[in-house]
Amino acid sequence: MTTNDSNRVLIFDTTLRDGEQSPGAAMNLDEKIRIAEALDDLGVDVIEAGFAVSSRGDFEAVNAIAKRTKHATVCSLSRSARADIDAASEATKPAKRRRIHTFIATSPLHMKVKLRMTPEEVYDAVIDSVSYARRLCDDVEWSCEDGTRTDHDFLCRVVEAAIKSGASTINIPDTVGYTIPSEYFDLISMLRNRVPNIDKARLSTHCHNDLGLAVANSLTAVAAGARQVECTVNGIGERAGNAALEEIVMALRTRHDAIPYKTGVKTENIVKTSRLVAAITGMAVQNNKAIVGANAFAHESGIHQDGVLKNAATYEIMTPESVGLSQSKIVLGKLSGKHAFKKKLEDLGYALGDNALKDSFRRFKDLADKKRDIFDEDLIALVDDGIQSGNERVKFVSLEIVCGSRGPQKADLELDIDGAVKRTQAHGDGPVDAAFKAIKDLFPHTATLKLFQVHAVTEGTDAQAEVTVRLEENGRTVNGQGADTDTLVAATRAYINALNKLLVKREKSAPAALWA
Ligand code: KIV
Ligand code: ZN
Image 1 (spheres, rainbow, N blue to C red):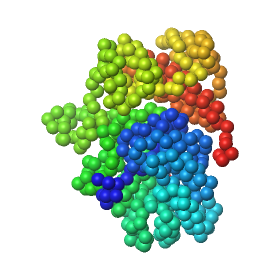
Image 2: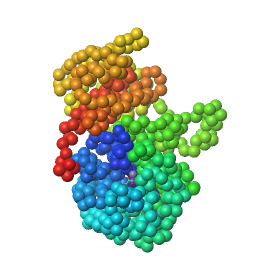
Image 3: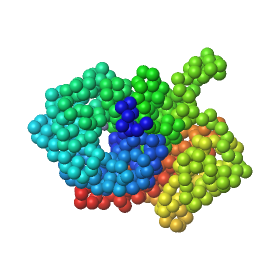
Image 4: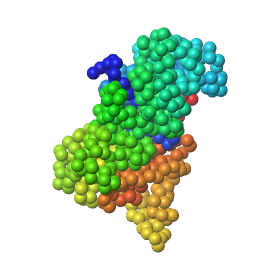
């Protein structure tokens, strides 16, 4: 099956661009690279790696992802200004396959209020931007922002002009999540019927979820002839988010009888990718979320359990294995050696360098001392928690906590700061507060805590706690993660992880001329 097959739907992932626009989901360079690698392994066709002109960080991320990505096309968003298009082109240059995605708003409201441009000016900007982008890159996508609220005659004119100017993908965004399936079906059909050169381009959908219809709208667009779906892992994105990649892909796979189109996604990698995105962005997946929620394959009622035991098909329309969810099983134990550990990590998709492997193995042995059964999830949490640059200014050394109902709660904390071990004691309103106050005591800073989230990695009272901490300072947001069988140690590690990221961000935040 090639990407040109008429029943092949391209998956255009925008987790790193539209997904990153979710409040609090800002990611650093290493995190973006890890997600891009996971997306490439997942088999998406296009990775929208960022909006190159928007900041130095975005430019660097698009560029680094362009250098590393093996299979997918790497794309950068750009407005219609030439400086935007130049940045998108420059950032994606090292990619094996690259795309410039340029957009301008076309609805009466956006043109008048936001752009302060007449329709004729917008029409000219479409021609100018697409032809300019096409001179720099063979693969150009054009989007009409707020497309679903655009006048149909005008939409047909601009789509025709964009194709004539060289766009090979035409994306029709439902920017504000306003459309409904029947209307979106009609819109895509109308474009296919009325735009004379429409057969020279691939139609694409980009749906937001304000009315909870993003996936339904995307699928009806496919039924109407769209052959690219723009989506994000876990459906993260602006406001209520974007169409969820895992839902689109599994709907196409599970209901192939009714929607007979295929994607190139290796569905067995879905859960792993979902967990990575949730951990990095700090945006936890709700338990009842389709496909990737903790309860998506859980059967609570006796009647359902009985049915599933007799034949899983009674209540399961897809298998847990098809999305990469295996029954939690003990994978390694106290006596497992380094080779078995390395092999297991490779099976889980982690190829660690020598130092990181050594460090993870040491932490695995520590964990195995505390916890009898080590599951896949434990290893993932352990490795994710340990992926750091090694150059962190603040390192965790030890923590002792006095807590309980009598109070006062107290934290006795040791940190290694710039190579010197420092110790303090702090009281707090609860043990977490005490631990965080102790960090502030040893390393004064003005960041405020925006999110504190705990989740148990596996079942059982000896489960590791995985904690996410979100800090904000002067408009900069970072997420930190920590995992440990002791929830308070995990929380302290997560805070320190976030703090180190903030320190890196502070250093990098001097704006370059292009982004000033
Ligand atoms: O929602 C939207 O309209 C977008 C465009 C920039 C493609 O994200
Ligand atoms: Zn969008």
